[in-house]
Image (tube, rainbow, N blue to C red):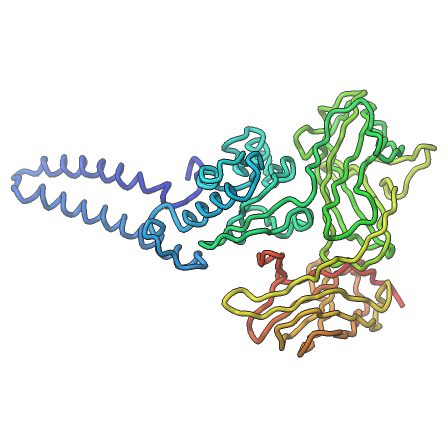
Length: 479
């Protein structure tokens, strides 16, 4: 615990033998100090010590058996998988064998537990825990668990269970949802193989922006200048990751480290994609930038699963320090920009091509797929109702569908309505915006259940993403 070692049982089992041996030495010495040594004393002490040590090993084995029952979603027939180090052995072996048989020899594979999958797959591994790459270890030291994924963009991912990155819920990451698609689930357990859908983005040091970059001029204080940006060709879609590169010209060495915020707003002004992150994925703080450098700064983005589309989305970016203070922004003509943010570029956004799925966890079979939705107005007026129409494309009915208006700032429920869905088709709600509420941009979202069983928003591999399906932010105004 002092060393911060992950508390897996098999890490601690060696101490059972070590401390047992030390205890044996101590108890034997005490027995020798007894005034009238009896021949049966030493065997008795040895037997008691052996019983204690054996009970500890038995307890550890029982705990591992419990883990096998709790976390293995398929029965394991191989007896070797029922002992240490755990239930992942057959899953990892089959994942590695599948990768070896179905991927190119030089395909990179991102994984948290690198050993077995790396051994059986014989593929170059991207290790999320920093055992193979000092840069990954440095990212973990600054508490950036997802850096290895975003920076390396492996060709394939082998993700185990519901929380493969532990401190970071990768399944909620909008960029991951659109950048990777599930292609295989191993028979023995919970490992799902994902494949990257688009070419890897790898900005390099440049003397000038590439020819396909969009030129622009915005100055952020007297520190840096945004001279161009690169973005995927239009139209955009929630199905496709939004890989954006900003090109910064350093005017003078920054005195502080700044964070870049990127907002994409639709035609109503609602944010449909956002990311706040240090430049260069945190690998080189801005206080180390030198005057005259041209920095290619990669920012991965992903849209909400079902944005209100078709619509047009526009960029808003800015820089702020640790205290939240933004650098002032002026355009090429020297005009100050509102809210200290650069607003540039407008792109069409298409609807999602696939419905979003709400599903129950096995062995339950409740499912409901939402293809699209529409809102009767661009804004909600306080004290009035606005129709909300949900297009249910698929349903293992009956299902109770709940629409709610949620204040994301103060974390409170503003409105809720539940309807029974008996078959696929349109489901209509009346969103009653409460009076007097100070929320400005509350979120519309959906929950579902079948009886007492909740249906969770899941990705295409069936991994649970959240307890609700987020729809959109909506402006709450006075009537």
